[in-house]
Image 1: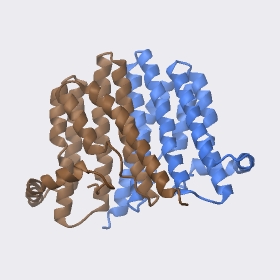
Image 2 (image 1 turned 60 degrees about the vertical axis):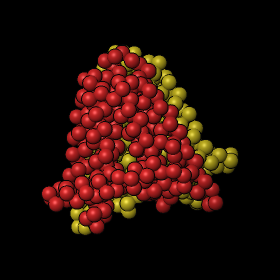
Image 3 (image 1 turned 120 degrees about the horizontal axis):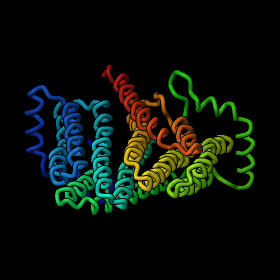
Image 4 (image 1 turned 135 degrees about the horizontal axis):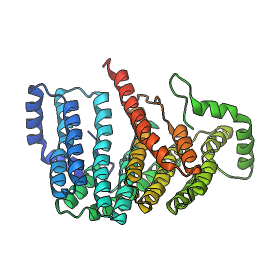
Length: 202
Length: 202
């Protein structure tokens, strides 16, 4: 449901364009069955909680597989809302909030996993990755609340999701959380600078 | 810098009113010295990082003391901005974003502390508390970005801060993170419901 980022190549937009036809086909099918975009958002949450439990139990690849199956749902609910022709504010709100919880559950699963492995660095990097991920979203939301924009940055949701899922599938989540810990926080700082640039004229 | 909450007793507003005179006195002194509200915000960040390091090293009461000294600064920068008569959008943005980082650093310190104590429940509760705390702020910011409001809830920033600092001062942070883990996430859910109520008419 997110709009295009300012300037530069937008990976999310590229994927949405490339998969427009199968997405629209699936979205219209689901709508005909009486399913709403919010149902899909909540189904994604349940799936991600399942993935988090698998990760916590040490089944990293299975957790990555389930999370990987849930990830495209974030585009499906958006396509459904578009096809319905009604953009519900609550739908947009719920989608954003559940997106954050989806991600935080996966990181929570990894915290448990790394604890069981007695991997202190893993726990710390996971906490920093979770912090960075949520701050990327927070900076944007807070800026928009003030009538500004903050969509820039190198590691938005979809890139974080891909980095995390690949690390899980290969049972090497430490690399994923390491990359996200650094790049998500860099993105948050990029957004702070972007907001500063916009307001400098005041 | 946060506005009043809808309905009910607002503890933050009460404190701001009760301490208006000393706050304004301090704020005007600082402004005369050429210090800006953003300087105070950043000084608070450095102080909270210091508190987080103390907590990570196991000096819980000292960490709590430093965090407790930093907490009122959040009201000082707001008072300074008010006295200056200019409400800078970037100031409001930076204040909010650094507030989140302040809190996340303290929770990060506790994650390290609980790891060293081999306290799995402590780590998990700290992660849940951090998640809840940031989601309370995220729900509000995202709602405001959509032109809605979400200031309700039982455990906003100042209450979380007090619960955390008391737990640190008494070297019993497990109770603090336990309370915050439950009540902050309840607050986030309260805000989701509040947004839903507002948009139901659509």
